[in-house]
Amino acid sequence: MVVQTQRDEVTWYECEACGLMFDDRDDASQHESDCDGEDPSYIQ
Ligand SMILES: [Zn+2]
Image (cartoon, rainbow, N blue to C red):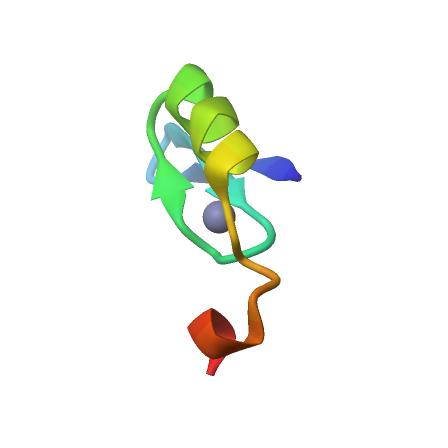
């Protein structure tokens, strides 16, 4: 899931699964659909 965060007055969109951050909501949404953040090999 993508969470919206505010940092230095800039809105970021963070992929909750893997922690990647995007400055564009559409980029985040597209990443989310591809995200494999729950893959243990990636987390480790
Ligand atoms: Zn992700």
